[in-house]
Image (cartoon, rainbow, N blue to C red; front, side, top):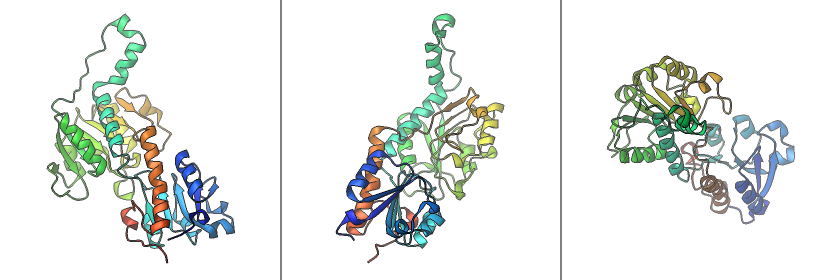
Length: 325
């Protein structure tokens, strides 16, 4: 615990949400470098840094270069860009920003699903291009939400919020997680392939990382079937993007709605050119309201840590870390 937070140096590597940066600067001694690269650290800065506020990758080498580092406050619920296991091994706590973005991302997931199934962006373009006047009504969509069976890959906070919304739409729901969620009424599948085989609408909310890398592969996509719809609101790394492009082009599945990609912001032209792909530029939580709440939680974690020795939202890998005396 620290009585004078203004003497605590918090490092901001690269870009940070302006609200978070302003609050860090007001509550602490803020330092900034262009990116999380240890070569940019002076000896004095490396010695002084006790916290990091970041929305970029923080690797083991960078953590090791900061001998007095205590906390990494990550902007975002996903924290796969931070080496949390290494941080925990070094006694450094890592926090993220869950809950405050749950409902916004779930809203986006449902909007993306509806747009994908009912082709609403293309119908709007039809009107704007004057084709309604020249050619008549937009063609009937071949797909509908009616009668669909939804599967959720990743039944965490956001997955559960999506499931509640899908229930209101009258869809049946099943899910796949590493383990069954106690007292959840939805049908559980111990494998992703089993889930894909049982549903025709797969929504991925899974986090990134080695355990989920390209988990949605060609076999999983084919299991969805020719009327299958795939939506990804989680991480681009969880999908074999080339296999998805092939599945859409060949008609192995009907359509896909994507908010995340393997190499953002670079989206392959082959995917952009597909008429049955609805694509968004990673806007799942991108409202002023929600991003401000995320920014506040980043800084609130830093304030709580240096005031009380306890973080508000530690990630599981670092939850057991206690403040240094």
